[in-house]
Image 1 (cartoon, rainbow over the protein chains, first blue to last red):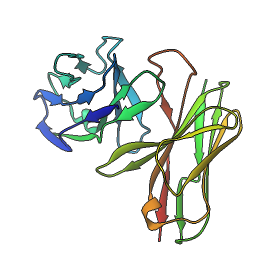
Image 2 (cartoon, chains in turn blue, yellow):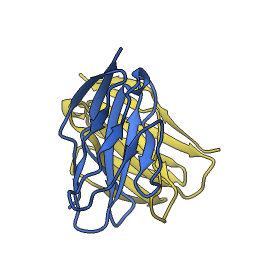
Image 3 (cartoon, rainbow over the protein chains, first blue to last red):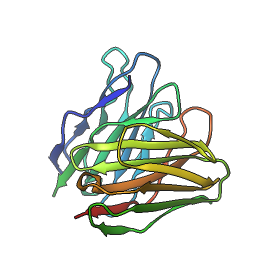
Image 4 (cartoon, each protein chain N blue to C red):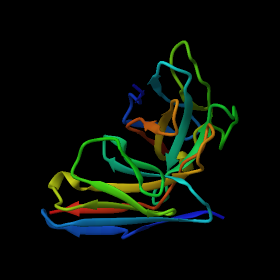
Length: 108
Length: 114
């Protein structure tokens, strides 16, 4: 069975502070991990995927198979980063399993 | 370019009434299609997915059903709505087959059952 856990429902930081959104997963095979983001009044959209190993909008995420984690990090948060963030796992098929989401608020 | 549409945007329905939500995709052929429900504190729950016309897989037992009458049309239905069916329903599509395929989401439908 696939499971994604985002332990923080809410996360609040100040502008310029580092931010880390936690994501842990449970999957017996080799997973593909994603982060999706939903800004206010916008559609849910892909932020980044682990196979790309890229930085998007200053965010990075490293897949740690030993700790079964895929935490999302940004060294200096901006107010426009305020959004709902979902971690997702894709197993051996095309279905995605989403976590419950973390609402990030970046205060001025 | 590809686009995905959902309607209606909002819907208020009485308990026991029927439901039909529609999702259409443009600019691609034979997409995988998905229906999700997004509820506060519960994240996104996959309800149905489809890999082709007439092919529907249900992820959770519930009061809802889905159909795919055309390649790029995906419909979510209910014969009799329950209060617990209230929520935000999202349709999504992805390119069929392959790995690491991104899912593209529609704008969603806010359903309130009274």
